[in-house]
Image (tube, rainbow, N blue to C red; front, top):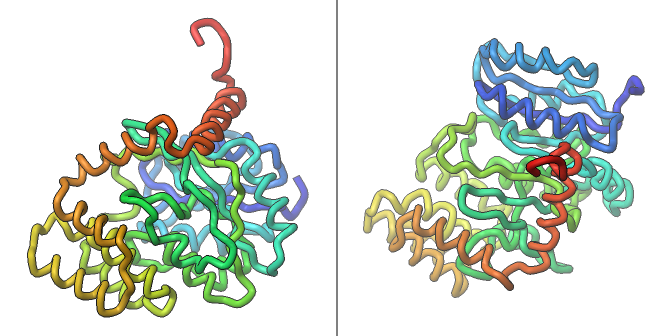
Length: 339
């Protein structure tokens, strides 16, 4: 490896040695091998440090923090330590497909702006279904805050960005660090703030390059948060959003966090906020109603059933099948006795 790698990879983790080992191995298996991998252990965690030390790859560096500061802080620490001009982010419970970094680096070099954020589609793997997200890419001239937030149906995922898909200039990630203390929507918050700079734009790889493991019952180093905290974040972020996007976030994401309160006062507060400061559409009202009327577990089951239905997202489904086969070949799971 050269003295300066092409891409630095930052992975925050805590108390999940098996999962982070899987993530690290998916990075070390990239077709682009001129990389460094920075695993930031978010607080005392001897088991994770010992497990990573056993990997024995010189491209891997482990940064152990003396105390936990949360995932955004751990990412910022990793970015400050990065040596490459480009930094890619990976959550410890996700995996990359082997060509992920090579494809994104090619897109970055061809970008028309100095500071491109390069994302990709992903395979969303839940306990009940698998499907590809986002279901579509940004339309020409579409405001990116609306692309990332506004629904064209009852379920999220039309436009979407997730941390493990992001590669960006290291300089940009230092200029616009992750918001320490923000417990939800960290990648959306970062992307919106980064896009507010004139030299930044969002570029998408059309193919899914990430396996997003959504075990909804598994604890994460991103802490639980209250809907009030996230509502205050949304209000602070209003200058970064169009009225259409502001209404969509209020009536979907914030409402899904607030709905378990079953409070008529909270219901009216969020509806009033969306109508006074945003511009709700038909699907926003429909999403708002089903969020407050249908229990979360049933909503997730209905979503997965619809999105994996034959004919729904057919092109993305074919892409997902190709991704899965490439992943099995890369990890030695294809063929063989009993395969």
